[in-house]
Image 1 (tube, rainbow, N blue to C red):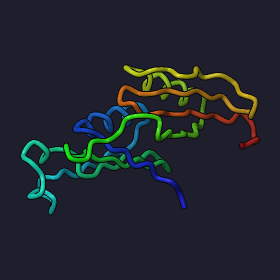
Image 2 (cartoon, rainbow, N blue to C red):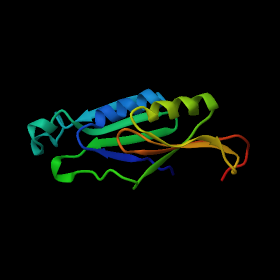
Image 3 (cartoon, helix red, strand yellow):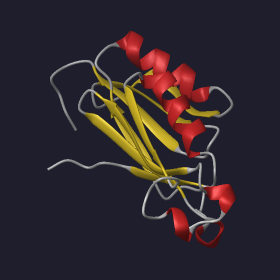
Image 4 (tube, rainbow, N blue to C red):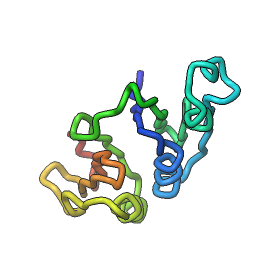
Length: 139
């Protein structure tokens, strides 16, 4: 079993997934409302929006979609995504990329649990925790 975060956006899902692909790398697959069984149920301005997006980054999977105007997402602190990084360079790059246009909430610093850790709220309002264990100690 694994947890797969599913993010909802208000028309800018593709931009967000491209932003995350730039930060983490990976393969992006996007299905649009157009050409799907949902096409006839959405307005013309929604047809080219993301019905379902998948960003695969090694073992990490992020899924997302655009919601129609009748289902506006609440941007806030209802979700944080914890990314377990493999190297300090990887962690630093992800932190810097996610901070572009966003807010570095907690800088990358060594923590009492044996990890280097930092927190970012990106420009889409999504909260990220970047963790890099420096030893075999896991909390």
